Length: 298
Image 1 (cartoon, rainbow, N blue to C red):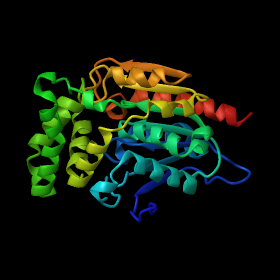
Image 2: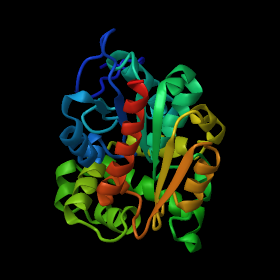
Image 3: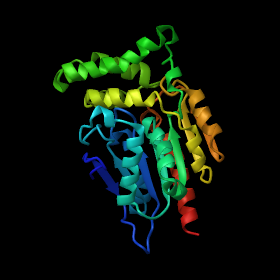
Image 4: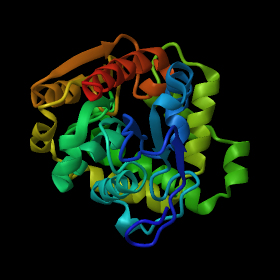
């Protein structure tokens, strides 16, 4: 798929094609910053195992991520992610109920989508906000308040500098900084080495423009008011008790702005809930799909 500004997006589509006589529920899964579609790979496998081809599933690598085309730094914004998501839904799921799920910057994308396309928010039969924020990210301390905002802001710059000055092969050979960031800041307990290794590799695959552009744009993200567009639908807000990037107060703020929300805290978990608490995320995603399918069959 090509974006409005000509970038190629890597997209995966599972399930039936909507027709005038058949409008299946479509689940659209928006992934985390510096990640790719594998952020949701446990949930995709679980949904396919449970529903087969009775459910439509859309996953994609955000612009500048994974197998999608590299994006100019100036185009790396949450607003552009929402426009890309809207175009993707228009192309692959033009009809039928939607269940939307967003992890981290993916959840922010759902908020920006509601701002830009209230018609798609109106089609949403369920929304899942996973380890994300509606704003005030400049107040996040990463659990290290003593370092101050200047030092904390330099962490993405450090990763971007390594991506700019070292080859991917070199960083894969000695991913010291990437592994430390993943193990200490992104995951809670227990940490499964295969999941941490996946996230390290995703970060290594990210370009400096992707890291800097989206980080800078997220600092001005403030879309709590946009959440009202999902008031008609059941929503879930999931957060790990040890999430350093989008901690519990951010999840509470989202839930407080959603009329039919349920806040779920995962004890001991960090920021990477679709991986480290895969069964929990699948459970709540399935609950929303069941409600959407029941409503569609009436």
